[in-house]
Image (cartoon, rainbow, N blue to C red; front, top):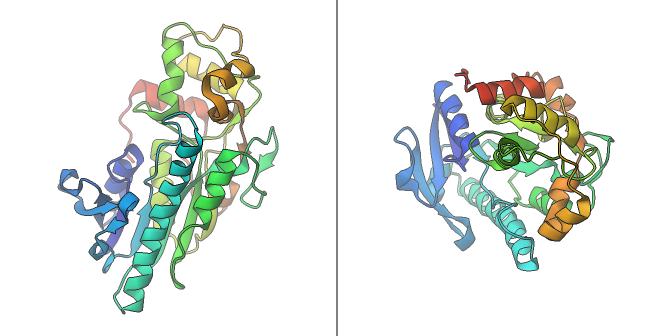
Length: 309
């Protein structure tokens, strides 16, 4: 039996992924600070990366490691202390997992053959309408700095197939960016932030779960891949499509960039910046998106259709 160890397994994407893995014959082991609270279908193991704690027995005999957990980058103003915490939460957890895999291999214990690790398109920074591939250089700013450190973390031993996924804005009604963007629309206070020309590269949460599962199954997938839909939109286009989905107009003047900077400080780069990111590389490997078009993705999310994953 194939065994997958998953961090962040109780989150929205992690839960959908666990279902896919189990349906395709995997045994799923979840790493959690509250392992006993995981569903009965998932074998729970304790870890606390902030304190360097990991029950490494979860990795024994496992075939795949999938690391999705990380500090919420939008949870609080970006003070210097907060920025250090965000970077440390990502690098520390990757290093802890990689060292555990390395230690088991050195002791001759069978352990993971593939490691699939989350990263983010923040790597590219604010790049206007430039099409960006995995070979594009990093941008500037805190988001780029964070993802650079994130992708450097975790020195996995030779023989481990390593995949790093630069994930775009994940669309779900259960939380995240979409839930925040729809709130003012529902109050008839919808407005486009900034110029509206900045690009938003997104992915439906079910497609992200499917893409991660695809990477786990395909031995020819290795290295860096963008986890975004083939349909990046300008913020203006995105907000109009969202307004149509929630049946609310977007008619107020754009929110000026200086106002967002006053409210959010450096964190405003998440909203005012943007990147037009290509998914061609993962498509060339054979992955097919179910929700490749923004209108289709929003229709699915807001119609609350039952969709097989």
